Picture 1 (cartoon, one colour):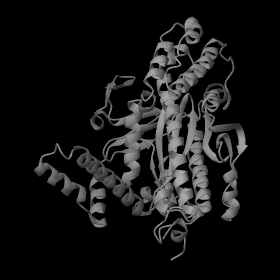
Picture 2: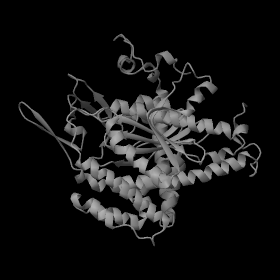
Picture 3: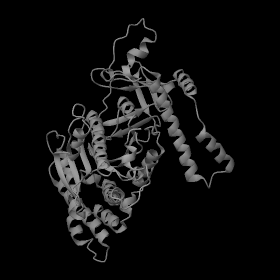
Picture 4: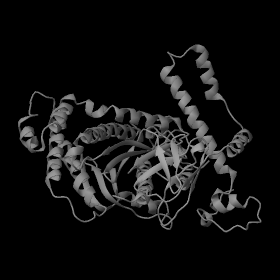
Length: 483
């Protein structure tokens, strides 16, 4: 039985004479069931099993046979719902409480707590301050004086993680989305799908090593040498270097896009800083739009339209009779594939200091990418559903000074996948110029993925049109039929 839509997210007053009054009063009506706690426990358990599976697959040759057997038993161990409920009850009796009062936290996702600790937030005069008993937290040391108290953080704090200007959902949004998508936007997101978890881990490993710009060693060296110049010498230096015609065409294009982006960066460093507050789209237009304009000029495979452009996939609302439930969306930026004018990239900016808006934009990007993939599926119904699982729709969120790339895909008949791909701070000052390495890696990753997705699209077209045989009963059309 599910909660009626009109009660979702709502709280009601509960008389103190009601047994377990605090349980019902503190929760929204749709969270009045132990089912949510049980699902969360199952998600945590699956994440643990995924980690064990990854450990076995990556280190199988180095693991002692006896240890391998032990790990395999851990991975395959199953629990009944009753056993999981008992575990939940045990943790309730051993929880850590964190109180947050009177501090200012903006433009970030802050994850606090270890084990099964609960978080209590008390708002006072619009500000918040974090306080936790010393005996319950190993990461914070409290020093109390007669008229004041001081909280000192240790250098490394495993139970407290801060990620600024990043996509994410609050717990209520996650609970609602769990029925339709496997989500992995952060190391601490519990995702019960091994494929999405592994995709996220691979993305993070590749980003850490700057894999895609490292595929262009000469261009990477050009970037490094350019950024080591004094600002006044940058343009003359770039005018005299990087013009070796013996380099491959790919290397020459990589150097060209770096040259164009750094020239624009040079102008941004010289112009006066604004004296008034910035609106939502001014930084986006000044710092992000030029990067992709130069991408289009160098590689000629994408065109872009910017600022409040209607999406072609708004047609999805009409096709699925969702006029009363869904809204037509406008995008801050759309990238169109030149060869067929299809929407391939989507951009949204959430402004400089609006964490709530960042969450809204995160779910908007998921909604729009789902519509795009769904509309594409409708046009190639004779293609293999397994082949379509390789399809990706990429979106970009610009929050504060950070550009984050996200990927949406089909995982199963019931669920999508939504995962973080890359994130990079786009430099605005000369002192921050070292951050261009991550931005360039994101750009070259985008190029590589667009080329890969063209190949996937060609396979799907071949299957749909009958040039490639698809096993009976495995097409999108067959799986779409009602049982």
